[in-house]
Amino acid sequence: MARTEALPETIAGALALGYECSRTPGTPLTSTTAQALLAHVVGRGRAWLFAHSEEPLSPADARRFVDLLERAAAGEPLAHLVGEREFYTLPFTVTPDVLIPRPETESLVDVVLEWVERRDLRAPRIVDVGTGSGAIAVTLAVKLPAAHIAAVEISEPAIRVAQANAARHGVADRVGLVLGSLLDPLAGPFDVIVANLPYINQEEIDALEVGRWEPRVALDGGSDGLRLIAGLLEQAPERLAPGGLLALEIGYDQGPRVVQMCRAAFPGARVTLLPDLAGLDRIVKVETDA
Image 1 (cartoon, rainbow, N blue to C red):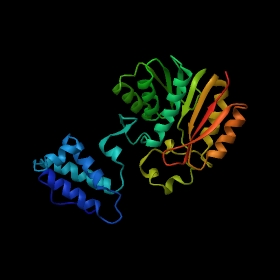
Image 2: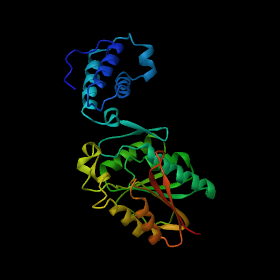
Image 3: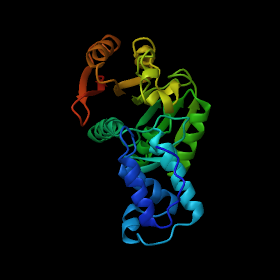
Image 4: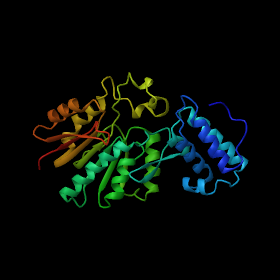
């Protein structure tokens, strides 16, 4: 996208500019993203934009919109441009220090909530390993008001984002954020261990678009993508309470290997491989006997 010289003077002009830019061959920018950026700039919902298309746009807002439009056209994620992303219907603050929450990870939350409900646990002890933005831990705290939740993260900047999100949703007193690697800082036992750890092969990261914008520490799963998952499986048997649940998000091509690893770590446990909404292998669920 070439640098835009003329600034739009109305909402309609900005919408037209966004649509025009989205039609540039090869651009990742979509008209929907352009609308979201404009809504963010003016502090209104997208529906308001179309109902008030003749409203004037201040020069300051126009310049800010054009700047965001150009950054989006260069591939910068929408979540970074507006500073948040929705997860499980909740808004989460997002910065370049954390992985942007993905819709497929909502299925991981579903697995935990369904298991807790089925077991009728009143105050489950849960740990979220590699919490990042805190999306999983905070969502579980919101949905399970009596749960005791710990959240471990190796990145200090990410911990600060998670703290902000816990405070934003009023659960800072129920989500214990801990700086450290995997389960090293915690003894347990936990009824639930849930983790969306880095699982991308380190040699592939630089070739992926996600590697341009999101923190390597949140992506790098080692030479086979399974280094951190393997490390967690070494610790988890001693930290998971009898009759507990271990739920892992994995790469689409890692299912059979992770299932094998989980069965070796938890002999006799029920190990289930679950798909995401696209039908790809995404979650491994381990249920141990009481």
